[in-house]
Image (cartoon, rainbow, N blue to C red; front, side, top):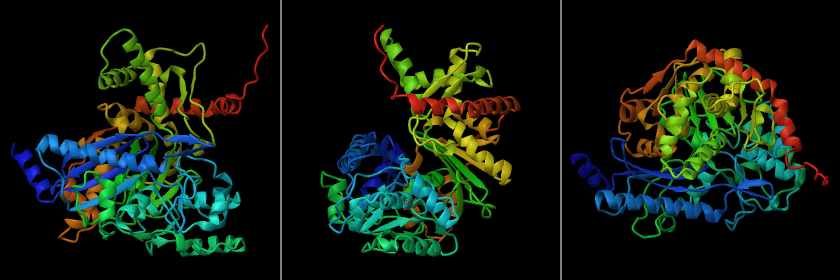
Length: 542
């Protein structure tokens, strides 16, 4: 009861901090107290749309989702504590990184938001990687910008501002065109010395497009880069209205720099120190390893980004993770409903995931390609979810589920094998977070086998990025000792808690190794599926 009354007092006195994160399938809001513990939450479910061949979320969907998520948070606070949220100590906004949101001088979006999921930027990414002598991924904002230039899209001349989803929402609520360094590093490479966009690359890009005669140069249209702990503006009256349509929330609340989901994942897993890392596994997956030094060479499948305080990070990003796995779980849900059995999704996941661990370590020869969308690491601009088996494979439910769990982190393994086997990167701790780890021990054990490394999962793993950006808000207003971000997190958020660790067994590692070799050998099957699926000629009647 004391905890509840303490949380109520924290909210009433305006000392709570709000973290909001826009994930691919869910928008989540978390209120945390002065001890950085979650005390209320809200959420909104949404989905991207494929429009004219490009993945997008409409501006209306963005604002409706934010407002509904905040309204759900308000309801949670009212139901739990019997009060309204009137003011807050700080607010932070995080969202999926990369993509393309371009606006004219009237603040009108010029083309629908193009998300990280789009893979239509191959020519631009390849040319920029060569120009910069630096790996520029397809999903980075600079790739999208150069691709629309190559495609001679009419709107380019009218660009006044280019930002990410987090940067857009932050701008509209504070009036500030800024971005946290972690999110900014997914727009254009960051110089680890200056903690700003790479000046040589900016110059090269402006020279590259000089003959186009646009009325802007790259520095004119990019957000200002801020580090964790720097003030990023205050909630305006208009921003307060856009967030809280009930009108209770007051203007003037400070904001921390808006960040991407990679940065908030690092914060939420206490993985901002060198030689630490984390894996986020949900709709997409990515690993982040904080480096002691730069890699020996650029790699097409490894992105160089930064922590929210500017340390260099090697990122392996996979477009697909649990979407196909979830689709199969839903098939079992439908079957259960067909039998008239009450459905408890948590129970379904727990039963199926744990049963998977009883399967053969190599999945009995079964293979799954979870490519709902393209997968650049394995060379696919488009994807086709695909399950493959031969007549002699051991086809049973345990192997079937294990194959899909292996597939969810299979591409992640391919990318990380470069870091660990070729670059000999050393890590002291890797922490997992995201939906894959909600069923205790299972996703953790599968990932440990994939990376051949101990994996820790904390109790806060399910909190994810909304809690992470909330912690960055706390770092802005509660860092009286002027500590580094890593020290602040150690002392004030985690208290030395490293989570529960699972080490891989030799058998699991060997089994995953066999699975991944079969997987790589079978990639031509996925290639054929992409080539022919949806384009099969109609057969005449016999």
